[in-house]
Image: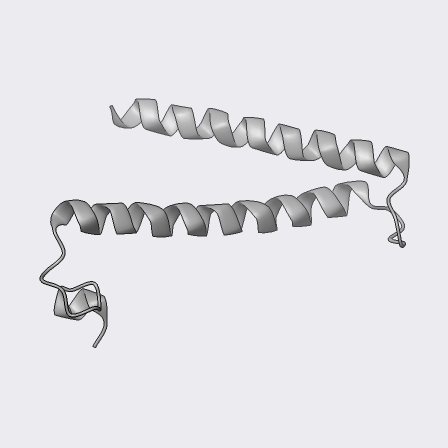
Length: 88
């Protein structure tokens, strides 16, 4: 049985409190979001900026990657703030 079906953290401890459960879910969601973010940025920025893959990045490729990642981070922040404000 897993920790969700037993109501415990998996160490034989008593049932997990609602706050502990919410904290655990927040951590798991943050980890999933970070993984998705990295994969998306890597794919989109690589496809856009790397024209001839080689052993190193050219100056223009490096600048492009940096700008691409910065734009993606900024856009993600704007969307996150909009969603947060809409829910409150």
